[in-house]
Length: 336
Image 1: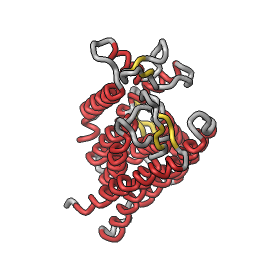
Image 2 (image 1 turned 180 degrees about the vertical axis):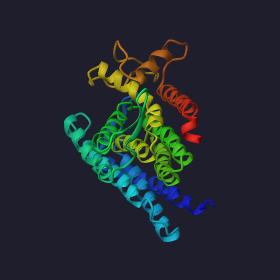
Image 3 (image 1 turned 90 degrees about the vertical axis):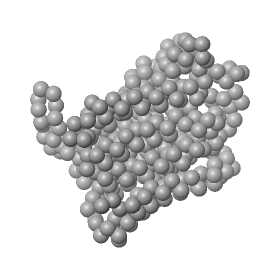
Image 4 (image 1 turned 135 degrees about the vertical axis):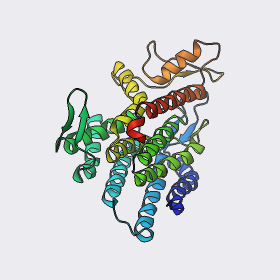
C-alpha cells in the first residue's frame, strides 16, 4: 500500500527552501556575501551561497521522513543508513560553505578540500555502506572486502563532490543539472527496491526546484559550493547505498567530460564566456575547456548567436538524452 502522507517530507523540503531564500538573499547582500554575475552586461552583485538554504530544506525533509517512519510506520529499518547519508551531506555542505565564505578566488586549498571531503565520507565508511561484491568484464564477480568501504567509497564521494563543481557559472545550470540527475537517481532507487532512498533524494530534488525559482536567469541568488558539492556528494552517496554505481556513473558523463576538459587547461581555465553589449556570448579562450565553451562554439557556428539560456538548455538537453540512454542500456538492472 502506498503511504500518501510520505509526501509530507518532500513538501517540507520544498517549502522550507522556498520560504527561506528571500530572507537569505536579503541578509547575504547586507553582509556583503555577494558575487558578480559574470555572464551579464552590467555584472550586478548577486547574493551568494544560496545552497545553504537548499541543504536546510533537504535536512528538515529527511528528518521529517525519519519521524514519520519511526512514529507512524513504526519502522526503524535503515535509519543507520539514513543518518550516515545525512551526516555526510551536512559535513560536505559545511566544508563547501567555508570555501564560499573565504571566497572562490582564495578559498580552501585544493588538497585541504580533498582531505576534508574524505573525512566527510567517514560515516558511510563506518557503517560499511554498499556492496563490496562487484562484477567486472572478463573477471566476473570479485569481492573487494574492506577495500570497498575504505578506499572506493571515499574516492567515489570525493570524485563526484569536487567534479560536480566544474560545470558551473551560468544562471540555473547547476541547480537544473541537479534536478535532472537526482530525479533519475530517485527513479532508479525506486525501481530497484530502495523506496526510502528514492524519497530522500526527492527531498533534494524539490529543494533544488525551489532554489531554481530564484536562480534562473536572471539570478537573484547564486548556489555556491555549498550547493554544488552537496549535490555531487548526494549522487555518489545514493549510488553507493542503492548499489547502482554503474548507472550513476553513466548519468555523470557530462562531468567526466568536463573534468577532462578542465585538466586540458591545467584546472586553471574558467567555464565563463565573453558577453557583448547585446547579451550574446563568445569564447574567452582559443581552445575548448568546458562543455559551456563547446555549446557557445556550436551555437555561434549557426545563424543563432549563443546566449546564456541557450548554453544552459543545450547542456540540459544533453543530460536528458544521457538519462534516457541510461535507462535503456541498464534497463535489466533497473526493471529486472
